[in-house]
Length: 294
Image 1 (spheres, one colour):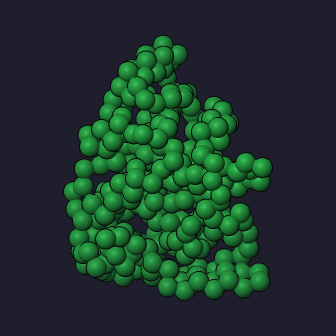
Image 2 (cartoon, one colour; image 1 turned 30 degrees about the vertical axis):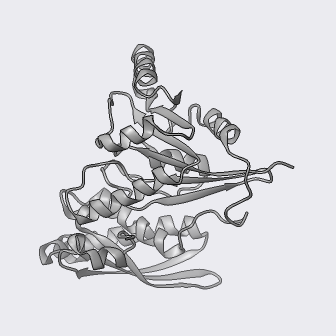
Image 3 (cartoon, helix red, strand yellow; image 1 turned 135 degrees about the vertical axis):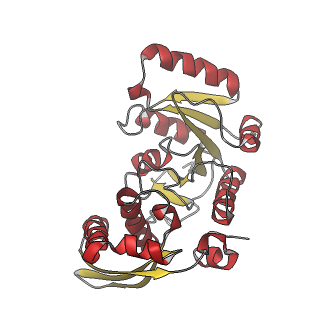
């Protein structure tokens, strides 16, 4: 029996729906989703297994021009996604015209592997505008297969999935067939807490935060978690905690609720806030948090 396997890497500008798409394709909420740019910081793999195939989807952060060391490290994940793909998904939304990094765009249009260009969020546009954009992108990226989708509404997602299977190369599985992702449990704890911070805090606060889970103990009926929210300045620490601890309690309560669904058991979570000055510009700290892979 022929077995297909490959890496399907999703790239595009911030907030075009990459994480929503991967969650829909994998059938699990692996990537956190908020309306804010730079919600995704790491490259996250979601693995779909079948007797005849294994698809390793890769969700990457939005392509941007780095402004500080953290963003430079984040862009390294996107570069690696371009290098090791068997199928490349370039995702745009109606109204978009180009990637924010011309170098990445040149690599896409000169790619030797199959490229699928997805025009997402078509549910927010007229039929005339969608047809116009389809023609524009066919001319702009002539080497790509163009699909119109709504990742949020799951419109045309099944057809996209079938096309991906068709394009997969013949190969053995790269991961065990019961594996869902390449990330450990603590990673998803950190991301879930960070998602709540992105949702509830404004301005620079969410982008100055890193979460580290120091303790993770899984028992038969409960998971016990102790996580530290790191900020860059003392003033940010006070904002995260809030008046009489109300703000951090909300983050903890909402994170616990989502994590109980994820782990399918009770969760006890303790949150602390610590100042870690200028961690976003510190290469040693970035490596510790899994960003700087060099």
